[in-house]
Every structure is written in C-alpha cells, then in structure tokens.
Length: 234
Image 1 (tube, rainbow, N blue to C red):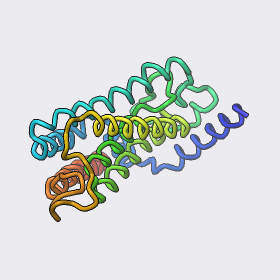
Image 2 (image 1 turned 135 degrees about the vertical axis):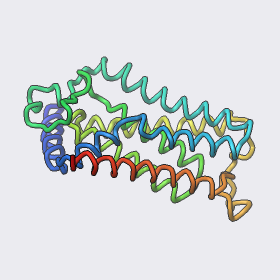
Image 3 (image 1 turned 45 degrees about the horizontal axis):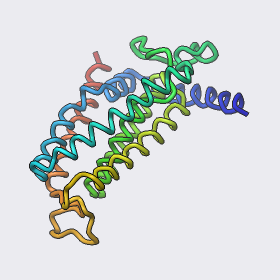
C-alpha cells in the first residue's frame, strides 16, 4: 500500500515537473517567486497595516504571525524531515535524472514535508482569518498556491511533500488564530455579524489599508514578471 502511494507520488512528480513551462521566463519566474527576500516589501506593508489599525494591540498579532512561521518551519524542517528522512526527488535515484532543474538547485537531502508550503499556507490561513476580507483571502491563497507549486516546478519536492506541508500550514494558521482570539486580550478582534463601518472588515481593519497591501503584493508580482522577461531576453 505504502509503496503504491510512493510510486504514484513519483509518477506525479515527473509528470508535473515536466509539464511545467520550462522556458527561461518560467525558470526565472519560479526561481524568483520561491525566494523569501523578494516578498520583504509585502511583509513590511503587512506590519504597517497591522500597527496602523491596532496600535499597541498589534503586538499579539505580530507575535502570532511569528509563531505561525516558527511552528510550521520547525515541525517540517527540524523534526519531520530528519525523522522521516525521505529524499527529495532531486536526490532520489529513482527520479532525479528524469527531472528538470534550474541553476543546478536541488535543495537539501530530505524533503518531506515542504516547509515552503507549510509556511506560505500557514501565513495565508492566519492572515485570512485575521483580516476577514474576501479579496485579500482570494489573493493570499493564490499566492500561497503559487509558492507551493514553485517547489514542484524546480524539482525539489514531491506532491505529497507539498500536500502535507499545506495541511501543516493550514492547521497551525488556524491554531494560532484561535490562540490569538482566546488569549490576545484584544476586544476588537471579536467578529460581529456586520462591520461597524462600510469601510471596515468584520474584524475592524480598514479595507483601504488592505487594498494597499494587495497593491504592494501585486507590484512585487509584476516586478518578478518584469525581471523574468528581462532575464529571458538577454
């Protein structure tokens, strides 16, 4: 049973990796998207929105966001990867020579589960629950899905690595939000049936500020696209 699942995972990995648009544009786009530093402007804007809307009460929110990343990353990278010790596809003799890579990037030895998927979906889940703004929720989960897919495209994670990472992230994102609601000592996080003002979300954040956050995210995305186009035409 287990071997059948693993064989399916290998076949899906090869299929998904090779079916990707492995052009110079696609390679550079996926490579940049998977880099953490490229999203720093979004993180800074996120902190600005939280502090602007919550003031001193922003501290519990920021601490919980940090907790999401620490829990997701430590469970996936420091505990499960060395404990389960499943080789990445880029290190698996059964498939490693059947995949396409970029810049000879093959990651570390072990890949189960994907910490990229866990971190991105953990953040997406927590922040979507926190802001309660439909457009933000749609965009942030599309962003998380794209970040997770880059790991398949680059050949460094199996589909089951990604799926497990997504589940871990969603779990810790929801758990940290519950802890924040339970112990955050912040009455404004209470969700009402209707927003107090049409300019606010149900959790009290200004929609205009969240739209600015989405704008920064889209600007970074288009900068990645521009960079990929530029590099692919050199």
